[in-house]
Image (cartoon, rainbow, N blue to C red; front, side, top):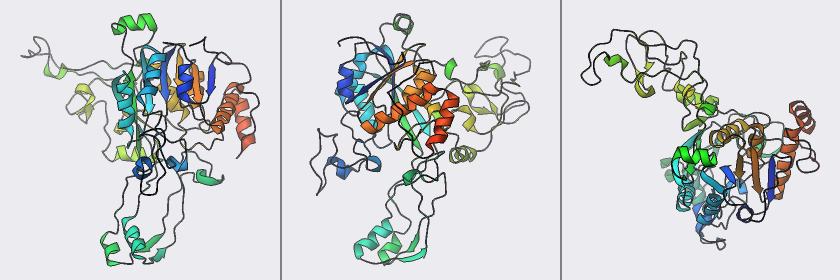
Length: 449
């Protein structure tokens, strides 16, 4: 590379254009972490690999001849599934630098294999659970009747609701017009015997989670040596602990007795007991959005109270156990949902953008905080509307964003204008926009915080 990264406002750098070209312009070992939401390449396999009437695939096996998610032509895998691309990410990351990359449940394996083949260590997987998924299933019975040329009788006329977005404005036109309304499909009766036989059969489940690959560039020596030399290689556990009620932390009582396994003076009930960290629970590899659908799914397994008495308590390794004494743990109660970080959507998430896959700012702040050292630089080669840039800015990091689509480059400009304007001015701008954001002016104008 040919020179240092120029951070506009000292905080955020935007590279317009192809992410692979942009990465090749960055210095070796100049980035602390990579937090990104690549295209999932969710077009059908027929469109992906070439069906009877499909155009030739573009740029190799992962190119696409058809449009991807919600008809977007950018939803392709020629970068996100390419070893060559992730090899460039590996090069620009410091030793021990982490990658957190979202993916779809159908194409996660392509992403993870490319990341691993590029030289990263796959460390874990994070599940992002949400209640806004919309099933895109083919009705088998209707398909059979249509193929037979039979017209189905309408039993009840439904009300179509497009893609569900938490906090969406139901007064806006287009796919955002939903605000969580219940989908009411039109009900029809099978018109053929074969259609009746396959009534109620479909082809897809309701999407309710997305996997993130958690990977790390190989260390330079031990973890301790790598952290001291480069500031990377570890996770910010205390900075990402899950809030918990610590008002009634309990300990076991009872007289210690001889234990044949653990020795004199140690009772069986004391084995494996730990003192909870007053900052909260250890971060887990599950995160959820706190929506009614997700909370209801956890509630289906019942409440698990903690504290005094003989109910189900947190026991060895955090599992449920019973007994007359309370295991040392947090004094809260409720479903298992409380053990995981909750990243709820808010008004700042979309800032007028029509991008179909905007992630909650709270989620992105948590992720960049988990893998980025103090004062570090976060890379997002698939910046979209700039949520990673905003999250990094709010967490006190710098960010390098890359975005090819001019529409989303403008979204990034609007987002950063609002971020730099401060909360009061941002609120006024959001009200003024009320359906259509105004031009933000010069890219990233204003003073950095």
